[in-house]
Length: 133
Image 1 (cartoon, rainbow, N blue to C red):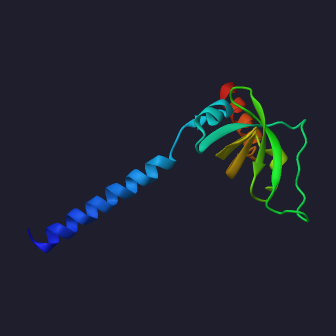
Image 2 (image 1 turned 180 degrees about the vertical axis):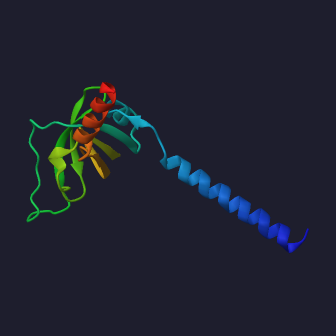
Image 3 (image 1 turned 90 degrees about the vertical axis):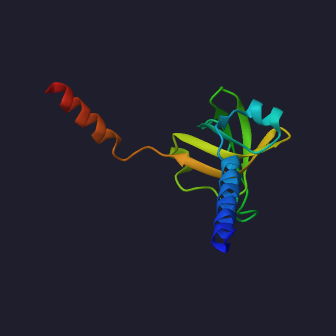
């Protein structure tokens, strides 16, 4: 075998290993029940329980934010986010958390928020005008 072939085989092996490690992080959404049973890191999608208490005091701990989330199955749990409170958090339509259960709480290390679109009203107007034509 030539050196070029050996280097090419090694590069392919590294690429396959990299793809395999990245595929472990990609997962479908789970529920709080699945996270409790599984015990490993999961992604949970849900909505903020706006009637429940949110706790964030940057003077005490700027990387501690707790709130309540209702998952897609309707189960509500306390979530502890190890980060600062995001701006316009209360306006979010959907929240996706990555983390794992710790006792009765979900310990989140990452969060994505789906916020209302500023173009939402314009989309409704455009659709209604198309329906009239």
